[in-house]
Each structure stands twice: as structure tokens, then as C-alpha cells.
Amino acid sequence: MSHKMSVEETIGFLTEYREVTHDLHQLISNSTVENVDLERLTDLLSERDVLIERFGQSTPDLSEMGTETMLAEIRQMDTLLSSRLQFLVTATQLKITGVQEQKRGANAYNNDYAANAIFFDRKK
Image (cartoon, rainbow, N blue to C red; front, top):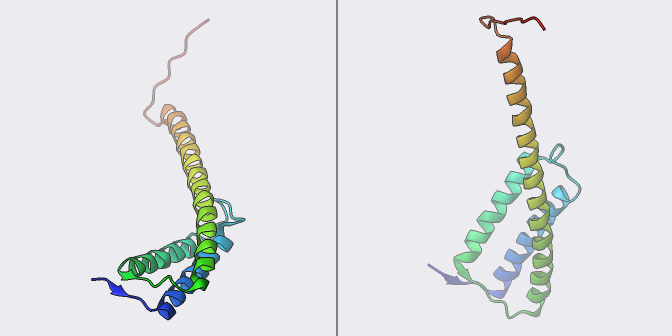
């Protein structure tokens, strides 16, 4: 059920969403796969999801002039966040693939030298 948000509620929501988005941006802007705080990242993304869901169930009043500036700032941060998160996801996938390949190579090597393995020598 959708309810009409007042201007104050809309500005409050946008302010809260902007702060969470800003915190996310700060967290990942210089992070790498190795040093990103995944727990904090997950918490912030979850918090944003809750805000988005709450906002989606409302009809905001965007008639206030201050909301346009906030929306523009949020859109800009969202664009930067999306590209940075995509970069981190891709880097993580590459890292996982590398670890899996190392594991396969180690398993192939270790399997050849298992206790029940038999070796055949041949003369040249």
C-alpha cells in the first residue's frame, strides 16, 4: 500500500539514503578485493536495500527544490558505486578462478603421488 510522503519525509529519506551511499562510496573507493571490509559492505548494501524498499512503497513529494540537488548527487554517487562494485566483483571472480586453477594443479600433482599410486620407469 503506497502512502504519500511529505516533503519533510522525502528530504529525510533522501538525506539518509545519501549518507549511506556516501559511506559506501568511502568504503570502496580505494578498496581492493584483498582489503575491502566485506561485513561493513554487506551491512551498508542491506541498509540501502531496506531504504529503497521503503521508498518504493511510498509516493515521495519531490516538489521541493532541494530534492533535485540531492537526487543529482545521489545519482552521481550511484553511478560511481555501480562501476566500482562491478570492478570489485570482476576482480573477485578472477581471484576465485585463479585459486581454483591453483587447487586443480595442486590436486593433479598430489594425486599422482598418492600412497597407492604406482610408477613405471622405462629405459630410454
